Image: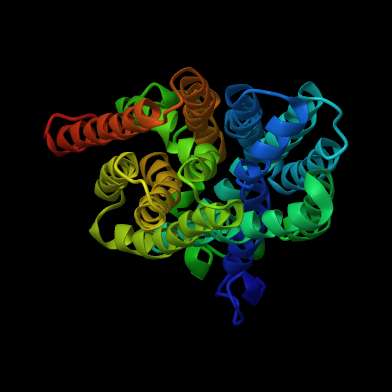
Length: 414
């Protein structure tokens, strides 16, 4: 038998290259999506649209890129993630470029909503699911690194979009972002691999052993009927009604309080900075103190920080909100896939995560657009922000009840 089948590779474990590829995918995909707040005012002005109707463009994209995991996840489990991730990045790049050529808001909906939505819908869950299979002991940390691309993208891309809009206009900015996503995204997607066994390794780079527990796992059908999955789904659904409101409405909120467009855009970067820190550090802490307990802490932290937003009226308080919210939001995104894999194993993890993320899809579809329409009616963000905080309180309570049930001796093993 080849030595490649009996011992770990002497060089860098390939799992970290898979993490790097997933980082690039989430950086470009979500970084581009979360620039939408920069484009809200130009789109509203050029097309004479209300804030609520423009916000619905982002909501459609968010619904699709989370909701399509129910299709792309099982396909990745069956055929491998790489073709799906490459196709997703092609759709993302084309969608952004076509949004720049749109002549009305319906065309923006079609190009941005469908392009970004379908693109990340095909790319996100397969890329993140692949990462879970390469690690066990450091799964929380590896997952955190992979989705840290979202945080770094939120840090880097909004200021970049602001500069592009200032120099090229919003149409040229979308074209430039589309070209970047197409070229770099497709190149990095080629590094995605499904699992370590094809390289003669077990997760974490350990020597190959076919008896590893990571070979198996709960099927999608079994998982979604379990009490644990139902609790996770309910928590994610309720949380998501408020979780994405800041990504669409923080910049307009700041502008309403007299902050310049360029400075307001930096608030999204502060969320990105906090999110990156949360994914690195809270993912690592979760590996030590328990990923399930850490998930409850993420929901509670997002609720507390949203309460700070409700009381904010100047740049410094908004900056504090953005930083703290980013930390806990980033921790949530990092820990959630690891918790799913802990519960149900790695064999069908992409499919299970894909079903779970439909909850986030519905929340994203409703939350940001509802916040925009509420603003149109009241000319205030007070109600949407308070409702967003309350939704995360409820999510934390659901996970707390799940923890209590897990501690009960008569609980189900799933």
